[in-house]
Length: 287
Image (cartoon, rainbow, N blue to C red; front, top):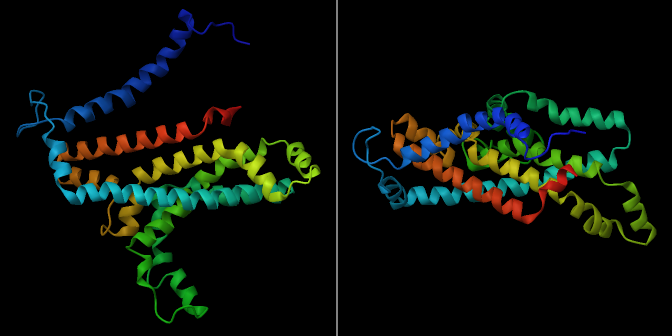
């Protein structure tokens, strides 16, 4: 057991490297981003006046405000889909697969694709979703359709399909951890008292795994909100979210507008995390 007191001088010295790192790579860039978003005038200079004009111009454009709403709706939809699929996968791996060898093999089958970059996995979906792709060929082979379906690629449907595959395991991972931490005696005691499997799940299993569900949903929320690569690759620049708007403004040398969108994106993420932390005490995840 450590003999260092929480508020001793040694504890502050030990925390100094991490604090300096966080200050340099997190706090300072955020402050600079906020500063640039309030720049006024016609030139980029430290002497430029600070004004709310950049934000006023952004919210005056109804297309941009609709994009904020569309981004949130898309993210919530992804959270719902990945939450259900991820919980089902986690429940199957922990509760239904009895042999440890099979459990490890199946878990690796889900996890190994995550060893490659997100961009490569997003690009890999293009041959599947295209007119001559695997999905269309399969549907025509089984007789579900006579002509290829064009709605899979360069559409919201394609973006959703790709992001579901990319982020479902993020929702499942924390749930697997929480399910493994539930003592089997709790379920056995409930069954002894004549509780049905549904009651056991509703009254015991799900409440105990709720912190894992929330952590998984936070991970999905943050990644979907910031994912511009999948949207650009699968959407073909025909569809955009807030993250893509940052890139478009930056490529167009509209630095102040890009900073405004980036700040709004961070505020949306922060609000989502705060709401999630108020739903459940996620500190139970490490209990």
